[in-house]
Image 1 (cartoon, rainbow over the protein chains, first blue to last red):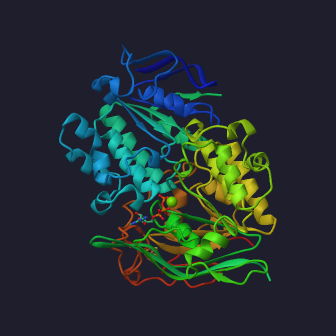
Image 2 (cartoon, protein in one colour):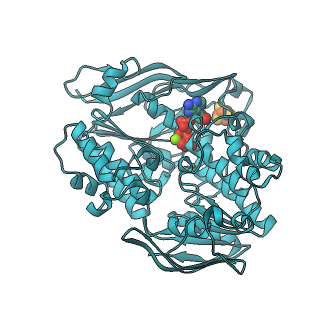
Image 3 (spheres, rainbow over the protein chains, first blue to last red):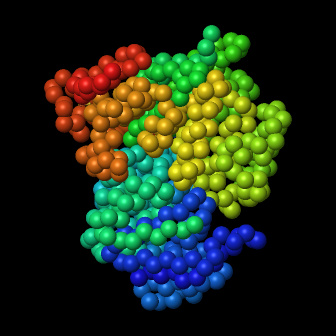
Length: 214
Length: 314
Ligand SMILES: Nc1ncnc2c1ncn2[C@@H]1O[C@H](COP(=O)(O)OP(=O)(O)OP(=O)(O)O)[C@@H](O)[C@H]1O
Ligand code: SF4
Ligand SMILES: [Mg+2]
């Protein structure tokens, strides 16, 4: 279980989260919905150990998190992957798509071959993989980010409006890939989206709950 | 005379080491005063490149062919493709055409507040309207304007760039995914605003993956596949039953319908076939499909050898 209790985050004087609780169980898709700007993305960053909350507790499979970002232990960090709403802000513009998808391997020294296979599975051809972010579309870049997120086989995958830049068919395809990953590995998925129909379709097969923030 | 943008045989190629990307091929369409045209299609099919070509914002490794005549008000007609950069910068971008870019947060300067950036746009374009008023129309509260980009949620950043695109009171609004990260009420508000702009005598080119939003505002739907406009139809007709097999597959993939992806994968734009690019994924294909289907220039058209037939009650 990936569990956040009483999370509070403020940016300057402005409080974004006030005592938020959320649990992401392994093996199912948990939905998270709420109006624009209610703090879903902030909570997502806390869950992915990328943002230290001002108050509250985060536990990953029972282990409490005390260190965040690069200070967090590699084991904890690689257990949770985050796919961002805007891929352009989430990549180093100097890298090729192949390097982006293989980035996690450089940090761990594991061989990068599975990343290429995964990218292919996600519909990224080898010709696209040698390009840099400004030479591909937003949707193509997002698929490279999904490959990067799954590269180290995380136990939890947080998808923050992952498909807003994708057409319906690519969206259905990508979610089918993620569902296959979930069934194969028993990973827990957090699906953050404004699209109620998508939320229903995505959470239904695993019978996961949907949490609503306000 | 009514104002319009008329695009004819627009093509864009990117030259990469060892490959040429066919990003837009032979695209023709028009947007007229009072109209909203929605452009939909698979991720990577060339929609944003088309928008950038019209704005003169393509990178140096691109070549463009074709024409895009802008006829508005008393100004002499201008071919956006042939016009020099100086003319585009001084008279077109922001003034006659406003662009809402995809990936809004990437277009805001991190060190300045949203208000500073909106005020600057208003001043540069000589618009005396107060920033708060413009922001309110985009669905932003004054206090939200005082934030720095990193303090904005994805949906707020979207509304900031939407407001900036309107700062010069442009005749044509090209909105590239203007609703990403917005919840339903904000999507609805954005669509209402775009509709209002069109009804006021402007024109809107809406690029979107949100077919429901497109249905709300568009008069016509253009579908792109692998760099080509493969169908163009009145919105009501399109949603009653799209005639192009790709468009039909796209609708079937919606979560509200089958949620089934179109089988196979998009073709590589560096290596497009001579015939119909949808052939490997199409269940209606025949030998005829290895020849390129004609798109024509009719207002309602479909580039397919075997389009679906629908019996629409009239
Ligand atoms: N600077 C560039 N150099 C080479 N190829 C490019 C460049 N910019 C875009 N492309 C390619 O051109 C094609 C069209 O890209 P475009 O950004 O227009 O897609 P899109 O339809 O807007 O996709 P999305 O829905 O994902 O935003 C893509 O295949 C992309 O990889
Ligand atoms: S031209 Fe042929 S292959 Fe192409 S969409 Fe039509 S039927 Fe399918
Ligand atoms: Mg695009």
